[in-house]
Structures are given as structure tokens and as C-alpha cells.
Amino acid sequence: MIKKHILIFAEYFPSLDEDEITGGVESRSYYLAKELAKKHQVTVVTTAQNGQVRERKGNLTVVRACQLKYSRTERYLQRILNSVPYFVTAVVEKRKIGFALVDGHNFFTYFVSAFMARILSVPSVVTYHEVWVGNWIKNTGKLAGIIGEIAERFILFWLKFNKTKFISVSNFTKQKLIDAGVRARDITVIPNGVNVSDFTKIKVKKAKQPTISCIARLSPNKRVEDLIKAVAIVKKEIPNIKCKIIGGGEEREKLEKLIQELNLQQNVQLMGRVKSNQKVREIMKSSHVFCLPSVLEGFGIVVAEAMASRVPYVCTDIPPLVEVTQNGKGGLIYKAKDHKDLASKLLRLLQDKKLYSKKVNECKALVKNYDWKIIAKKLERYYLGLIK
Image (cartoon, rainbow, N blue to C red; front, side, top):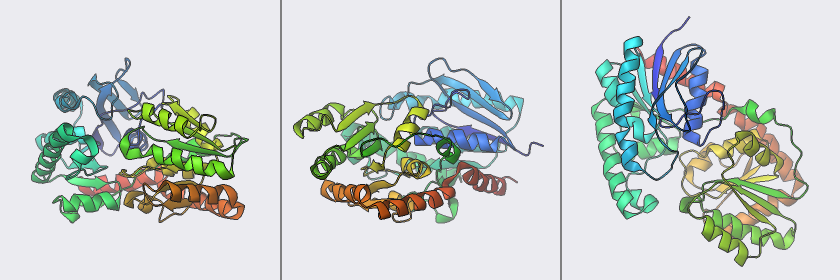
């Protein structure tokens, strides 16, 4: 028996038959929509890429409102203006069956999500991943930063005015929302997760040579250069060390030059964007250590994926990653931007078999908390508590 009909606005959403996901926000939307659809009617209003069309499987309907090429930083104006086709599409779907709750899953859907909920007189929810108030210029540059700063402050004002409820993916993000003026009682923390079975069912052999994997966009905030510099230090003790870096971005040319300068052409491989999720998982699981050198994360879902792969990690000491890992369970934490400390932690995991085994067991225990099935149950209880 179907209990409720939930409307989700998500900027990106994969085809239901392909299961190829491009990022953490999209992963959250996809897996939670699938889990919720086991009991409820779920409609996702999103964009289309590469000829994607309307899809339906069981209680899950995916409606493509407009075309939008995948991007992290470009086409801000287009992404804002997409609110119009999102809204029109949702109105059309509403005529077929009413919605009991509306949830916006990323920044560019928050306004239309709250607006639609207001029109329908149903609970309004937004899922907040990162708060950039006060840091837009630092994170994106002057022009885009000024626009983003104004936009986020306006969006937060609108959401508070609309009496929207906030789902934060971490306590760190919750505190940032509070600092930005959102009332604590309007914020509930429901973390991101992983589909643990996607990783446990993969059977691959460990790489023959000591291997570090990294999945990160090649952008300034990801600090991939710190990992490359650390590999140069590790190489002095482990000459056959390998490092596979998955991800594309604007810093690729700069990183290629750094690899050459440090004479790491035989050690570090920039693999670019790997389209197959299965292949990414295989690379991660076949490695011995995973590394995330990022200094800006809302949650750090790839670290949870490393734990699901039973691969100990080394990550920065930024608050979201400290929170997600419960202060280093399943891996080691190093001081952000300190490539020497990173190298030291990588060497510890690669050379201390007892420590390594301990961290593998911690990965197995901790990642259970982040299984999408468990997260979905928390989300369902939260939704039902809001719906009258």
C-alpha cells in the first residue's frame, strides 16, 4: 500500500537503467529515491543529459524538465533559470496526483522547491550539503563569488520566510546553517551514505605494487598537488609506489607539470574522469590506501566509499571528514595542506601491517552506519513526522 507521494527536485539524476552517477549529491538523490519508492510514490523532477527521457520503475517516476550538461562551476545563470521548467513540470505532474511533501536536493533547486511547497500548502524541505556564506569569493573567485554570496543569502532568507525545514548532511553543515541565521530546531542531520553492497560484491585482487587511489575533481579546493608531493616523499622508501588519481578539472595541466618536475611519471597516473562507476569501484578496491587531500567538503562521501571497499584512507583534518570518520576510525587523518604529514601517514599505513589490519576492521564496522538503507529509514521517519 502506497503511503505518501513525495516530490524531489534534483539538478542531476542518472538514468534508472544505467546507474552511472556523477557526484555525491546525485548519489544521495538516486539511492534515497529508490529506497523511498519501495513504500511511497516518488517523483523526481530533474534535468536531462545525452537524450535521457521520462522514466518509471514501480513507484519511482523520473521527469526530465530540461537539458543541462553536467557541470560543477559553469553556467550559473542557466542553472538558476532552470527553476522555470522545473516549476512548470512539477505543476503538470501535480495534476496527475497530489504531493504530500517537497524536498530540494541541491542549491539550484532550493528556491523552486520551497515555492512549489508553498503553492501546494505541504511541508517544504531542503537538503543542505555545504554552506558557503562568507566564503564564496574564496571558493569560486571574485565575480562568481559575489553572485553566489548574494544568491545564497537571498535563498536562505526565502527558505526561512517560507518556514522551510532543513536536512543537513553533517553536524558541521548544521552549525554553518545556524551561523547563517537558521534556527537549530529547523535543522535535522541525516548524513550521506553508500550502497555498501555495490562494493562488497566486487571481487578484485589487490594491485601487485603498493597503490594509493584518489577520487577528486582537479580543482584548487581538492589540493591534489599535496598528494603528488607526498608521493614523491613516499617514493624514497617505497620506490615502486603507484598513485591513481580519478577525476578531471581545470588543474590537470598544472598537476601534469608537477608530476614531471618531481619525476613521478612512472608513479602517478592522472586517469581523468572514469565514466563507469563499476570501474571506479574496482580501482578503489584494488588499491591499498585511499587518499582525499581536499580542504573543502560538505560530507566526503568518497571516504565512506573507501570504507565500504575495506580500503583504509588518509584524509585531511577538516571538520566534515573528522566527523564522518569519527576522528579517524578506518584510517588516518593528517593536517590539511601539509604534504609531509600526509606522506608520513601514507607510509604508516603502507608499512605497518598490524595498524593496517586494525583500520580495515574499523572500516567494516563504521561503514554500516552509512548504508543507504539505514539512511533512508531515518529520512522516511523524518518525512512522515512532517506530513500531517
